[in-house]
Amino acid sequence: MLKGKKFILGIAGGIAAYKCAQLTRLLVKEGAEVQVIMTKLAKEFITPLTMATLSKRPILVEFFNPENGDWNSHVDSGLWADAMIVAPATANTMGKMANGVADNLLITTYLSARCPVFVAPTMDLDMYQHPSTQRNMQTLLSYGNHLIEPNAGELASGLVGKGRMAEPEEIVGELKNFFQNQDKQELLGKKVLVSAGPTHEKIDPVRFIGNYSSGKMGYAIAEELAERGAEVSLVSGPSQLSVIHKNIKRIDVQSSAEMHDACVKEYEGADAAIMSAAVADYTPEIVEGQKVKRKAPKVSIELKATVDIAATLGATKTKNQLLVGFALETQNAEENARKKLEKKNLDFIVLNSLEDAGAGFNSDTNKITIIDKDNKTQNFPLKSKVEVAKDIVNELLTRINGVAP
Ligand code: CTP
Image (cartoon, rainbow, N blue to C red):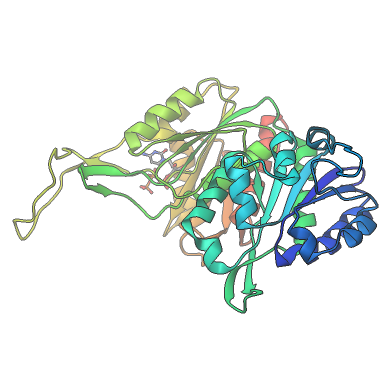
């Protein structure tokens, strides 16, 4: 998978730099080429001789060779590579990457690189959790960089928490996954709408009716679609999550009415829609203009039904469009899911039952059953939402290509 691929490995000054020896060895063993760029401080943690020997190339540190003025072109390196890996990515280096502080060769190369960039952070747990580090990481994600999350465990400081750089094997695994998906690109040229997250139905200026949906499932689906080449419109209710892939256009909405309008607009000209949002079924009849005061011992709020977005799209769906819905059930799961499939004119429905441990809202895992309009039922085991997203996109793919499942 990585044979012949060219990597720039940007090593910053952190204790986890020692892991770069093994990382380089693994990449070279896979048949990849590795050009190492080190910051000055990184040389204190692992020697240039070690890295040059393992990568079979002279390492780069300075903008030019002070002996003969030979220029180390960051532009050439940036264009040469199929991917850049910044590992360990220290708080300092991530801050510079996020803000364009181009004071060393690693950063100038990063700023010139047109290839995908993978960032493997490492630092002490408090530094990692600091709002500035978190903000910088969000910024890097918003640039389309890929984050290889650190692991939790004992840190060099002796403290225990999140901040250990991912192991070399894990980094190589992420790279393989990326190139495997990139090489696939089966959804190139396809446009897909994804709805995700909860909706907030306003009661007054400071209160709303919401639900526990985190958006994790919908965001994972959007990422998977984008990784496979689709152009994705992600209509998202309020969510803490961020979008990573550059192929995803995120449209933020609050209420079910806003989500309805955005979805109707984005479904026009789309090849498919996957409706994973947990949309409120009812919304306050009257939104109070002022904060409701505490007075009476009991109050009631009159609610009116919202428009069913999936059913609206189902009613206007053309023969070239696909529509996928979700069903979250607490009882008679399959029977209720089948009814929804029919009522909303879906091509297939993804059922997650709250009766299953580890499935549903806010969890990182999900256990699904896919039921299609011909009543074919497939049960999947408990998996991470990222893996579940792959199963759902695979199912969509068999139909998008007109292949009977
Ligand atoms: N859905 C939608 N618009 C709504 C309600 C639901 O688009 N106003 C979509 C969801 O995104 C999901 C599917 O319809 O894909 C089923 O949602 P769910 O809440 O399980 O079903 P409801 O139709 O709301 O039925 P009920 O709440 O009675 O189970």
